[in-house]
Length: 305
Ligand code: C5P
Image (cartoon, rainbow, N blue to C red; front, side, top):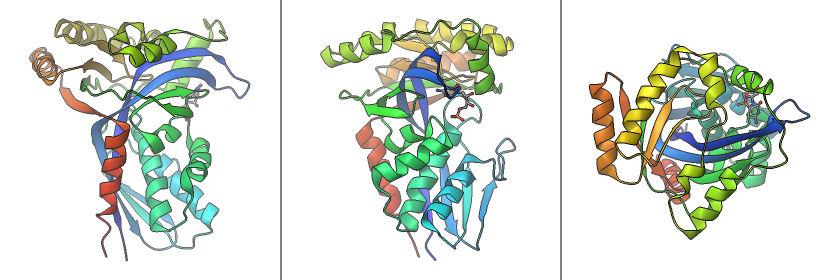
């Protein structure tokens, strides 16, 4: 029987603006997604009749609340597949850190099972299933540097793909995305539009350097939700900017904090400086759309009997 081994990459939000609350209760967003080469390993093993998740991380659910399991169930009923699958997940992406690990796993399962079960869903079919699973899942079908609109699920790749180095710190504090958005609601002034991400995108067309336009509207609400984060992120941010990061920000609703660097050397220095201050920092390179597709293509070669 064939099994498939895949890498499921993390993302950071280089900027995130919240424009207002939508009729469906979700929020209207403008965000800039970027995949990085920090990845979980996933092995899909056809087996039995049901969907089973095997994962050694204590915070990852193994029941049907796991987004990867829901992705497999959705595909099974869509394709009327009788066969089951075991989804083995080896976690490297921090759980609940705003790095999209769960959404990325779900997208990897959609792409992987579409191939294993020869469903031939194509980009539109996969996108239709991905939006049912979560707002960030469609982005992971694409990867690279991309603009996310609507709930974050309308995704457009940018013409200039960012090539850089990120340094990440995961403070290990779980922040609920739903609660961060709810906290924001009290002070949200609904806007028809917002400019900072668009400024960035148009600047990027002229050349790099528009990072100062970017901000994360969830950052303040996340720090109120988890006040113990405030002092830590303040210190992390200072080190990252001092070492030359062109952007330092919380990712999504947190709690991971990251810096983006154009060159490898200052990124390395920032990592060392953070380690010296007692933080455990990780380095990861950004992945362009092409690199993301390439990594995905290579996983095909690992199809084995
Ligand atoms: O779609 P997903 O389940 O990943 O989103 C988690 C939570 O984040 C949602 O339940 C919702 O409360 C909030 N959210 C939102 N608006 C978005 C995306 C997420 O309010 N555009």
